[in-house]
Image (cartoon, rainbow, N blue to C red; front, side):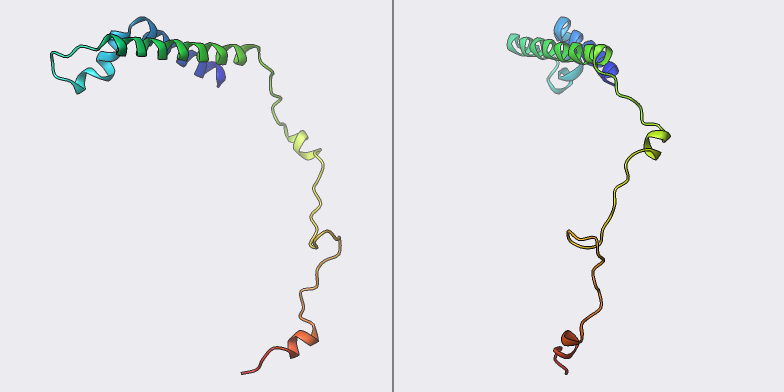
Length: 111
């Protein structure tokens, strides 16, 4: 997944870095009137964003290729995993008494 995302970011970043005018045409020209052109500052902004996207894409690509490999979980791993013991008491292994005691039954006000 990291490799695919890295390749996508590299491609988008390269478009932004090397062809900022065409990126402006695709993204923003339809919002303007027919005689508008992008400013130099906006083209610089598109190039900077493209450079950052390429840097992030390159890092993701390298981590995906050379980074640590995760071991897939197998059925044997699940079967041999330590089991968690569930208790019913708070800090004790004894089950809690859910029956009402005679004192509490008698102390209930009658209507």
